[in-house]
Image (cartoon, rainbow, N blue to C red):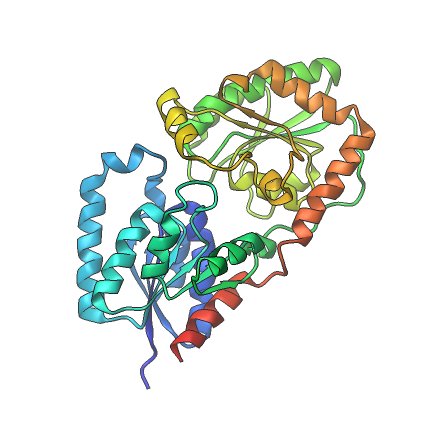
Length: 365
């Protein structure tokens, strides 16, 4: 019997990372996989259709600049769905493009699954009704998402968080050490780095006034060139790693909002979370965001575990002050590490991609 063909689609580097593991598990379960994603999915798939993830078309405005490319890709995938009739489509996050792809699959009679839900709980909850109409099953990575979709009448399975397969257990010992190890994570997009890195470097200078000799590492995105981090020369070492080994040794992190905040939480790392947007993007975000926090650790805990400084509050003075207040209050620092590890414990067990693949293949059998 011919192996079933499954189309898997991801649109950003994070989706490419988790998609590669899903593709591997689907193939191990007896499927052939055609993929839209990035270089990691290219290495795992039987067929690779397009590198969408490396284009970094995220945010409110970036996709508009490449509307022609996205339209052309959608037309190609419509032809693929109708001509090849895959057994299933699996979309990974990246709602803007995947919403269109889900509709194309529906019209072609191809059942669709969604691994890693778009953040419908943070903004635009009306998307739940769209997903209910277009998706056979949601494969979600946060426990509260399972409740949300089930209450809305959407078939759903909680598969656990894929980062649990990647982020190692945190180091032992709760107190910060001197000289300090300070981690800087200014973001994964060039616009984020250009906004956040100067703030972090100025805050680092202020921290060093209190803690001379503090070491600093800038954790660089694998998708950005070294030139994006030129401002750090002489102040911090720029590193690229995939195993979290050096990040796990940090005492405090200055971090852009995003996936990195959850990675830090899984490592039990106290952090100060910062986010700045263009004023137009900030105005749009303020109008649609429905959650009180930006850091995933705070969202999962339902309270402000780590300090958040957004837009006009994100100044070097405030960032440094928030970091020093954590470092110089041993009881608060220890409690924060414990609270972050409790967040990790609430996300299930490793094996999310394996469980997601089993859910897809089980529904098709």
